[in-house]
Length: 304
Image (cartoon, rainbow, N blue to C red):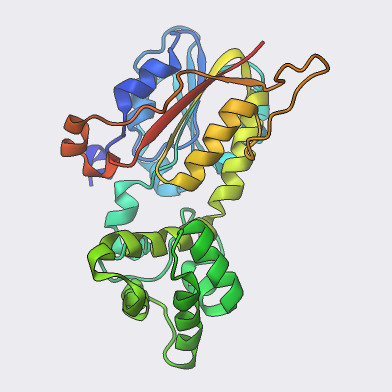
């Protein structure tokens, strides 16, 4: 599989423009994936410029491009500050990018278990070395846990019915494949919304398997300490849960959106949003890359 097919980056020119790349600046792409965004950033760097790109999937690191300004790092962005401390750049980073979408490669590789479109192991681990798979969650979580998972992470109204069905399935052959999961939940899926609701079921399990919401919260919190004053944070989200967290954080410095004020009643948020609304793909991009349809780019600057 060539580099271009691995993943098509969403909102590429808008993201690069938002980061306001300086040739001698220091940048971090916390989601290397297929390398599309990273390659574009690296191409704009000159003397003294550095780009560090993280990915928890060794496959992405193995496919990383070569560039004298670029360093790929195998790791999860929830530990961002550990890596910046190691490289001695904490507090001096000019821009951070996070594209929270799942790479095409993950969806299209049935053996990774991310998609309901092809049968494969019910895995969904971004980091194949992690211990817990989606099948493990389905096999061990109780009805209440599964209900919360599908209701919160999947935003499914029929969350409890799906949970009860999965728990009941343990009495039989169990659910170890994506095909078995689809078959089990199909009775609770609206035929008119089949693709959307199945995607929500898979999304909920994927988020739980990879601890995505906890990782995002940690990443956002650490980004403030990693950036220099005036440095920019650009994050591309794909569903309402993560977009709400990013929006709140960029507006208030907290993922819950609660505004903290100083003694004079002024907002003490360490971040200042750039633009009042998120940047979304235009019709031409959606036509050429349908998977970008739900992408939203939000950008903020660290205040002095």
